[in-house]
Length: 326
Length: 273
Image 1 (tube, each protein chain N blue to C red):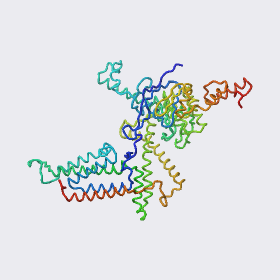
Image 2: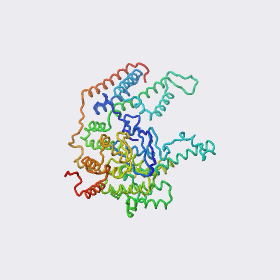
Image 3: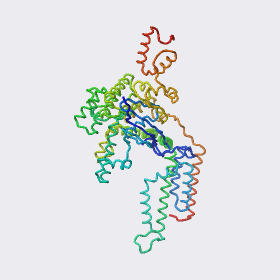
Image 4: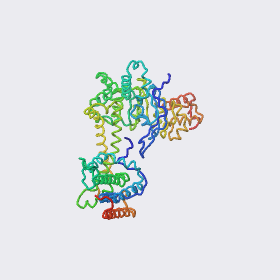
């Protein structure tokens, strides 16, 4: 399948508390391309600028420098940037200068407003955003803000609820009565119900138990396949990233240090270790086995896959494939 | 909003930053008394000079200090106009025939008033808000007021509540911002519409904020209980405040300054109020 850029960041910088004694650079000259129709993982330590970058993608924060493009449109466009260029477009050409200016201004505002529906952002610990009387109403909050019809809202709420594993009988309960993991699912459903073209999840599995984690990631993967949207997952867990992401970007100290396909990124073992990130344990293990002469492909990211391949090898040779080592 | 330090604490390493917060409180109060002692031009000149020296000592950028004056500009302008137009004196500046009469005394009074308020604010800034963390300040207040414990005023408890409240302000600010962002990401619109619509739009922010604040308070209370917190009695402190020679010197200095101002007043050099 052909690779297409969904979101492009060009030399983006971001500074917190500019001009105060607490000034801090959160992003420093970051250029990143995020593909359509795949899962992109963004990895980095706490404070590496991951969450800041996510807030830039739907216009919640504006970059100090640089541009953010969604499908080629600069999301922070202001009137003066495009006035002359758009003026020549057929839909504005027939208008008077003043009317055209007004129409273009309205169009920019409309796109700005649309942005948060096109790029759905699930924040860290999203369960804190629940507020409605019932789970149903809370999931419906986003679609309602989009101005959809009641029937459409209803079908979207039920669809998103079913998708994230929110059970039908929870829908009429108060979100404050649910457990932490249940609330998390409701919060994610609330964003999925807007059917965004880009779904951004900031540490979606933080604080969940291993079972809940796997379940959640599998649901996200299924969502991506079904909707063919671009999904961005922010995490500091290499294991999760390796297992579920197609492409990976690595941030360290406010800078982007690596980006590319999962295979490409994890082949830079040294660089990753330099910034204090490890390649997944199972990949590491397979590397060591290969070094000892076990014939295995290099890029293995899940334990299941490794076990499967080792079994095959075992069946072929009839002995332990570990090159004689016990 | 992020990273706005609560209050105006400006981190630097200066003589004033290093002073004991209790000494700073006392010195600040005495210095403010000094500003009210001043009644003639010479005194005010000395006072301004001392304020300049203090600003330099504190290493606080002048720009920051002046910013605290901004909300007062209107009041300053208003009261100085009243002073100028309504003070009666001997030296009339405007022609006799004018209805509006301005006297030299009025202008002097306005000037003194502006200087007094400016220096009063600058002094609180230099000694307290810019150079002392809110926590250190409540600590100092607790100790200075501790004699009141004898008459059963719950000094420790009030100080503890104050410092917890102060500690929670940045936390809640950050939380508010986080929740607002989360709701904006779901299409909440806080900017448009009339008053009622806007107030309604804030509901999705206030409810989660309230719920999490309650939860936080509960957790904090539990954590304090777990560590056997039982109020101020017999409690030792992590940071014991020490009066050093320099703190005593500062207090002596400010008293001497006050006495100096008192005598300068008597000399009556320059315009006297």
